[in-house]
Image (tube, rainbow, N blue to C red; front, top):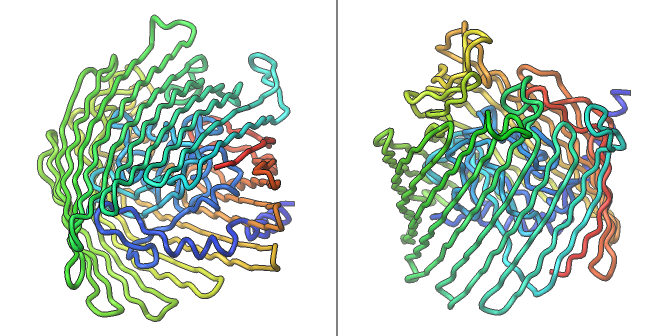
Length: 617
């Protein structure tokens, strides 16, 4: 049976990806690296893009769901369907991946447990850019193992959007209410598209009565795009999300069965672009993030064991590009102020100033080099510099070789430094920032309907921050727990076939292997995170389209350093009607695998969902 399952999953993946014209469009995408605007086909880094077409075909309803199928990304869910999840890349910790929205940092300085509490609906996303490896030279602090950039779309026409769904696994909550586990949701949106300004507004409500944890998630997102003339434009956005969920087993297992958490996040961003001359461009931006985190150890008794966290950050950034006769120069400066007021972290604030400088040029028609550095001043950790270099050589029109080396740092969160939740967890004000060096070599090959790439990397993270203790009677405490050395290999192959005028098939298969090793550690300590990364990750997607109907299969095989291997298969069938109406059916965890991704928190068995969508935008 296992062999049959494996064959079905691998076969299914080839049905998963895009239509022929999707692949053509990807080659024209320019990666939002804030200064040097580079087409994806000319990038010198290990970068890939999840397009809107790919996202729409996945059996996914949230940004978190989509990331499950992204190569090299380890999404560890504590609850289903976007309740709460930690994200890491290529063997790093959940604090070492930087999240961006249209190039703007939206990280949470209290804790990265809240990093994915985002108000962005899938319908507003144009693409997701994944940059693997240290990227301080381009994106600044906390891009230790990689960067995920959410790029929203610019509306093309006026219209409305509606999506509603219902899901269940037909099992009953035998430990509590006796009700059947279900989930439901509704998302509404509207676009106004004029020649010089476009607007989009989305609201959504998602609810589930729990599979280990009940949840209720409400979101609001607005974005306005303004074109003043050919040389000047502006984008303004506002987002709000309120997410409440049961937190059984999240942080203080086994005693937290009656715990609950409420997280509210507000995001505001204004950024503009100005073409000052044929050679000079300028791009200023201002952003604000507010986060409220209410952790209730006893959800029915708020007078004890309750933690309230209020955090704010405001940042400004100015980037500029100067076009030379041969190459481009990019420079930028950023400022960020972070504050927190908390019952268990207390009141703290810090400032960060960063300076960017990059130069990119074609040394020969085939050899391209990008070199630069990021210089940072932090009010707690002083001055630091993080250089990097990328290079590529085009062997021919189909094959490109790439090599890069980069550095970065991760400044400790306020939780790492100051948390005091005795007897469970305590911070450490003396922890140093984590620093990484990585070098990578690989190639990309594209020919007709085939794409293939492969990379090998070596990364060294010094002063790795972990939560450790000597005995189970002691609280976990943040410490610089040695150095983490990782050898890694990743590869991906995709094939697109146009079977007939109205039929297409795409097969995609990616594999990542990690060999981490800790150095200079004290083995007598117990560690929370050092052996939790993936060792093997296989992701296979298949997409078959015939006329207005698509069948998508997505398979994930994971082996952790300290956990059993597991295989998850998901599927979506979607049929579109002529009147912008479509109906879809999702089946997740088809083969009923028993597994968990964080601690001992069980994730749902086979889950079925039926949805109806109207897309008039």
